Length: 363
Ligand code: ZN
Ligand code: ZN
Image (cartoon, rainbow, N blue to C red; front, top):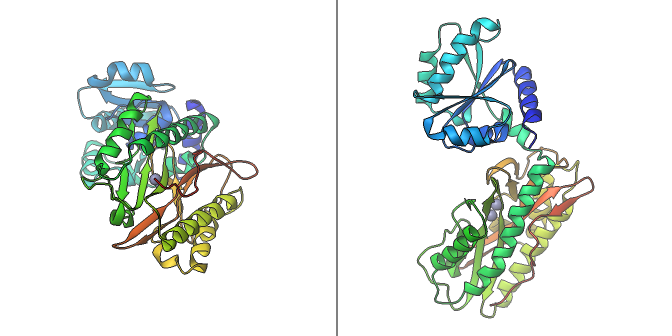
């Protein structure tokens, strides 16, 4: 992982935002910049260098993981240690009083205690998305990790099909999948596994419940693993028993919409246009109003990150971006269908990272 390059990009972005220091409190951003995967810490980045503040529980872990920044272990809350450090080093540089904070990742209480701990003359600047914008483009190491996580996901889906039977609870199916994921090396799941059978398939986020898989109907399976820090994400919808004509047609419509959006992915196209490619196809089949969410999202250290692949979004695709393509339609009280792949934008189009058939599987 090129931590030095990432730190350099972060400092350049800080300059552009007119702050001289950034207090990084969002843990995925800390992991991105220096490799630290502990659950408590604050990273201060400044032109003079970067320091990670954490406590004694993470001494060994920080020693093993952190690259390119100094580590400071203390007994006080990391935020207060960072404030003291800023105070001590403020005389080193005249512009040190403009401190960027991650507005989306700091509580009001933390902001207030930070402001109290800093001497007069220090100004806190609310920044949004400084590091997230850098993280949008994945470097080759990151793409390799996401690919590995996604391939594991696709492999786990084949195993999932063996446990998915009428009468078995959704939670049992999810549990077997998650156990297999851990055995295969996953750190954890990317998000609570969705196994939603029968009428529950109409819930776009139907977490696996105690309900049994019905004798007939769709089952939406949406899950991901975290492998070496990076998330995978995929959805396949299968049908138990013989599907009715309307259900079969709906499935085909979603499959075609998903395929159209995947085929539209290439550098220079906006994410709004990708959403439009899927949506237009469903609208033409009078199914547009049942497609109630956006087409996808970025994936990386976090399961949902920039960009949002949604109507009207102007972000332009560039090589190295990793996004999901996941249109779905939901008939409340009846059934739902969603198909999702994770793809990486290449120089000429995209590579599907979740290799798994998308024709309608009937169990
Ligand atoms: Zn998903
Ligand atoms: Zn997703």
